[in-house]
Length: 458
Ligand SMILES: *Cc1c(COP(=O)(O)O)cnc(C)c1O
Image 1 (tube, helix red, strand yellow):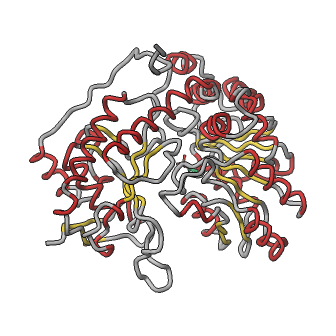
Image 2 (tube, helix red, strand yellow):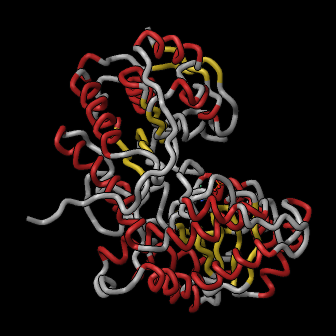
Image 3 (cartoon, helix red, strand yellow):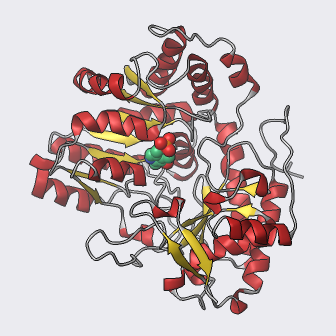
């Protein structure tokens, strides 16, 4: 008999979590204005609000922290981090930052000007924010297939080469660089194939442009290339990673994802001019060049985290857990963005709460219902997150309305996944009775989902 699959680690330290009663949750949800961001973490049983900075560090990472060099300038921790990044990516210039959006802020301060256009595959919201706040345009060139949640294709995060080529043919002079997000977070943690990265490179070369990878989940992307793309089954994750980055000119990184640290990020590039340009913004925004917003000990933990998370076994444990949750949802017929992505399951609320009008935010309603059911915290990636149209101030109902269940790395067991699946099934089973959603009582002008105050529709 074939042995079953099990985690590639064992547990050395545990953190107690607490269940609550339905009455408690109803009170807390009301106090939080039906916005899960305003709950206290201790009011949550299983927390799937994000996989960012919520992973569990290994014993090797904790041990490395003790070797942290907190020197202001020239810390040995920086050089250990830099050497690891260079070994994994081939990039020789490295600037640490306090998280991913800070890397974007520093690099884009140098590269993006008013009137520019930055084409890419579904820019992440902070990436888009850092482009748009400079009065430039983030042009989405993702393949159309990404919008169909039920379509199963292996690389649903890909850039559409035709859309990209058109953008370059029409606006080459306004395009400072192309950005490719690996994996494509906004499209549901969907990977980008090596073939697609090569096509992007060819188009970039044709127009003499550079390419940045927004690399928060580059290791998960490499895992999907190994397991789904022809010709990569026998390559190691580190070989695939190196090949991926050979097709880019630089990267921005949120280390809170595939670096498996709680805080951190960096820029890396092969070009001296980009380094020289970006470094002038690192010093005022982040800090001196050999720490740029990170503690020495955190740079050491990151160096080890990057090394560990570019090993197949660690990634396999992670991705198989996300797939496991997906399979449980399949058993119950619950619709989600297919196939399961690398870091989360995106439940298609518009296909479940069909009696809740879109004006009453079905995905937010489902998020609230799941919390009330079992104390599980997901997060709405839907009509509330989409904000209002900047001109008409109308809600934007054009996109998908999803409940995201992000899975922290190395934190929960498959027993927790079972609880999530069954809790969602219980809500799913009574979906016909859920006919009313929520309404907005107070909202901020931008990024309203974090602070919005809601009330159930009576
Ligand atoms: C999280 C993320 C960012 C921003 O990183 P932070 O560390 O949250 O600032 C940028 N791009 C992608 C794809 C991300 O997932």
